[in-house]
Length: 453
Image 1 (cartoon, rainbow, N blue to C red):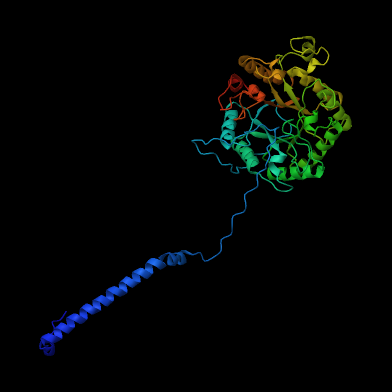
Image 2: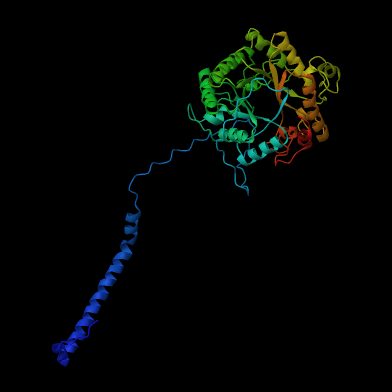
């Protein structure tokens, strides 16, 4: 800066200097007041200004509503009665995986599977499928209760749990057999009764077929087989009405036609039937039910099913013991010297004889449930209980007997169960299981895993 050399400024009197100083102080005060005012305004207006600065320039589209869960859980699909406890590890998320390559309708003789409970708990679903894969069990049977998916009303679907079960199995490379049954209240009013473990088919068949259409379309290529209903030879599974093989055959045919139109590679399996000697309005022996079903089909199962479903609990008999031997032996026939053929694993052969007699020997049988119980608590089951070592021995021997003696007509075989994580010793199903509810293996699981497949 240049030095000031104006002579007039050098000659200012002393009084003028005082006024200059006073004026400067006043100006400084005014400046301070203005700054303070700006700060005050900024303090009170700051939030509004920030809000304006961050305000979006477009309206956001709201997320779609989450599916409404069903209010009632069916008694026929074992499930937790309380909320799952928190886990230390993150709960797996069900995400779509590639659709598995198609497989033939005719199965190897046999193929190996287990029934599991993949519905309510993703963390144990993923765990149990891993255990199954490690043991060489390549099929999982899972119930898909209609009331759990479309229970809120016609067309109101909640796919969340179904997606979880299907995608987890696909990710593990395990084939899915979907047991579909249990109509919601709006479709079958008055049928469902949790205390009696009762369910029933839809009043209007078209409601059932609409559900199957939505279900099979969503999971096309992901579910290899469908079991159409469960144990219709019991009144409690048929809305409390007497078992009716002709009505069931009509349901089976309509279901087959619907499913095959969506995915011709689906294997349709008829319902597993309870081996029972009771014959009244509450139950029908499985052999008689199958005979009357064939009569209703005019001895031609084409267009009804690809494989016949059966249940084959071993009761107290070893798996190689024939029905002829069992019916003569009071230690095994439950005191029924005439009708006691049902109390053994090889009762499956009695069902097979009906198929052969009706000209249907080319089709396979799928054993949808088999096993031995260790139940010491419930009188209805404790009379035929075995110990854990015997259970393990018999289950493996049953797989081996079928492979040796029933090929090529035996298809997949499903042992019961991979335990539901909420079962306790008070549940009779607990005593059939090959694992503990916490996933620990029982002797049967260990022996299945070691068994040559």
